Image (cartoon, rainbow, N blue to C red; front, side, top):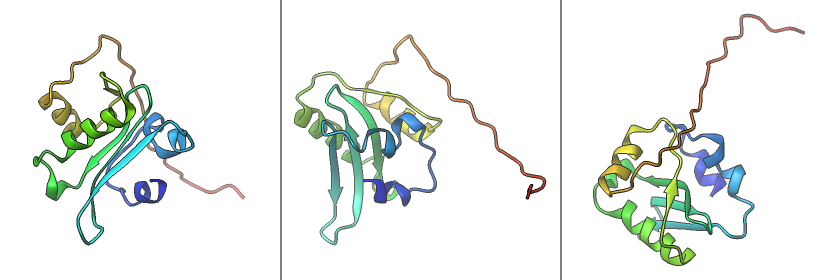
Length: 123
């Protein structure tokens, strides 16, 4: 999972949903969908309590039900009835979870960032 995560350079994932945070857990379900040629089409990571730590589907294969299939299989594997997710600034993922009917909890946490600019290097 960590090696796969490093290949996804075009999406921001906040620290609570990045692989070092949950990869050592023995309670995490890691599932993927692959083509016959071993190309990864989608991945999910879900905790034993139903937290979706990671969900990704290749952009060329979105809107085909793969994300829903991954979530259903992960929930079945973890034997849970309710799932939840914390979103980073990801419009496509937010649109997906609204489309499949997840509802927003009244509590929110904001992640703030600031690009660092280095004018000079201190030696």
